[in-house]
Length: 94
Length: 479
Image 1 (cartoon, each protein chain N blue to C red):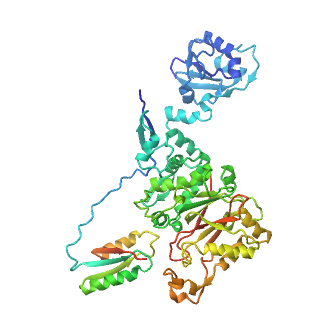
Image 2: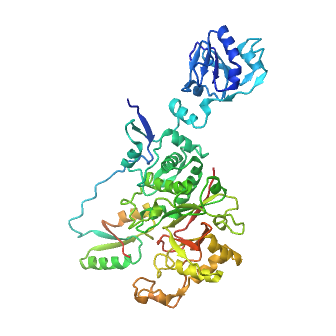
Image 3: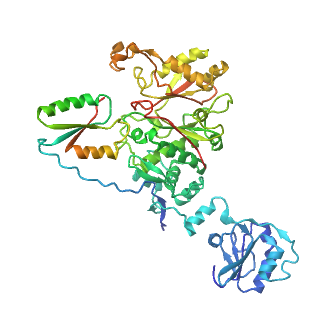
């Protein structure tokens, strides 16, 4: 004979909504590429090189980022990214 | 209560006053058809009385809020109209309407505690017959299921077995605080999920906490959620760090925390489970799990739990909480973003200046000897090392000042490439005299057993671009 017992759920009881990623564009032509610096040391040096290569291909860029890697991007920063760029490269470099 | 009951006594055999009034119950049973005795421990007591109801399950005692036996209750049309506890001849005569009731008995005898309010019983009865008020989702299991294994399967464990959060355990845990279960403590990263006092209690149960630890856990969660503590970054970092909790004030002794032998090690329930509770909250409520948001390259054993108390036994020593602005006698938690123990040995320095220089050598090694001013550290000063400073009249501020000063090194030894090591500070700082930490980057805590010229360095998280960005946080522990 069995009886039903229970315990309680220690989680936040949220179901994360997993949204599919946007399909990557076939070409960067005519698009603005956001170069997002996550705030780690020397990331800007790495992005400088990427930006040079993109400019050689006449692709427009925007430098974006957050002040430090230790803190998450604020909604304002994310909105600025959405406003100013069509695709984004998020980069770090130590 | 059955409607035909007009007069009820709640009693137990294991109560001298109930036994004293046994003849009274006989008399009432003979006079009043609607008389019932609800017997808590023996349906054969009182003997030869019709209308004894077996209440060993204590359902009726719970439903009628019985705190004392005997309790006499008068009902009219199923509703209670009068009640008295213990034996008081005048009150019993008034309620029963029997003028000579108990004429051979003493006038007054106090009753005994009801079995329904014995320690540990009340929560079971509330869960079985009442509304426990717990709102978290029920996870059902049968007799043949192992709830500990179910917790593992659901991903609720840090790798060690957890205590299944049953209603009775959660209710007992919630008795450890004056806060309501539905109060929101804050939002736990990385999912920024709302965390109530009830969720904290659930995870404290799972960690193995006792109810009296709950205020400490709540204060720790509150401290961890201060933006300057940067919990999201700390749980996500590739570095070794996790939250370290230091407890100060009378609460530490009250709940039996260890600040002595093996203070940073295993074996003390409060130390072990308070730190674990905070990490389980990050995992279960916030969703911060290794391999997902937690990207630690190697991690460290301190991420299971890291909590200890400061030794405040020397009145000459200013406790960490006081140094951080709280009055003596206040109980506090201080949260620090740190990694495991870096042992420090010096068995030969005998003067405070020697020992300060020696400690600075150990502290300069945190992270990397050539990395500076990106990290804080805690120095856990053992009694034997502390005695060298105390005997020379050095207090907390003096030790901090002297040790910090002793960490200063020529920039030329620290620049990238110096001594054939690529790691290091920019070449432009070659002519500076460079200290290891920012001026407030070193915190000293006293702990440890009486023997051993060893101290411990708890290096901080290697993150933050300036002194203000990441800071330890101290919060007062309130009931």
